[in-house]
Image 1 (tube, rainbow, N blue to C red):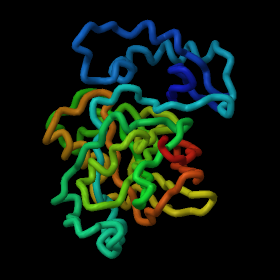
Image 2 (image 1 turned 120 degrees about the vertical axis):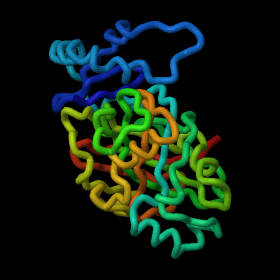
Image 3 (image 1 turned 180 degrees about the vertical axis):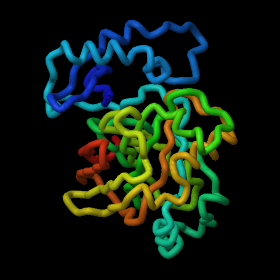
Image 4 (image 1 turned 90 degrees about the vertical axis):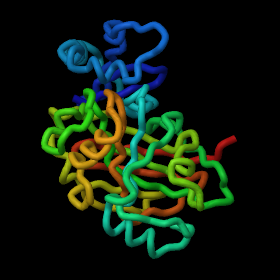
Length: 286
């Protein structure tokens, strides 16, 4: 199943015919009082809602994809976890280019570990990346995004995929400079998730997915997830050894070689096998 959010927080199921509006089923979600939960309510309750989503999507009239504004398929992630230098050739390019490392100590992922991005940085494919600090280089980074489906704490790699709800394309926009990664990667709009979440019944093996990103029609990054240093299973094992993963948490698995600058007016086109593609515009923050 392919699940999206669109327009004014509408919920949709995506098929070959278009987007089927199933927003009315959100009324079946539990209601909470303060304090609010640390997980995404839709992702947590997705297994229970699944039969109704399938039935409703069969009965509704589809909307053309071109006529909607896609939001992030995950509305309330508790954490956005990211993997640095998780492709060997990207590690080599970062070490070789001063404008990428700025004198920072760059370790391979086994020593660097993971880092967190602000959840306020999250947007969808139909929203615009709005760059800040235009006096500095802002780069595109495309990667596979993993959506956690049920709580995971100290899980083994062998059991890790049991805790996954689905997958998306992720864009990790980055300001280059000497500061810590999470600081430079967390401005508003600097995390793009889309175009929708593909659930694990449609994508059960994330280890061999080809993907790419083009800027204004020029291919910049073109790789396959089988080149990951730490694969999805190992990343979940590592992350869950430090903190509990909750439904709706996002893991950005790392970007391959070919990162490059983006500027206001650019158009990014990202695609990934078995997920789809998304077109994202770049502008300047007001």
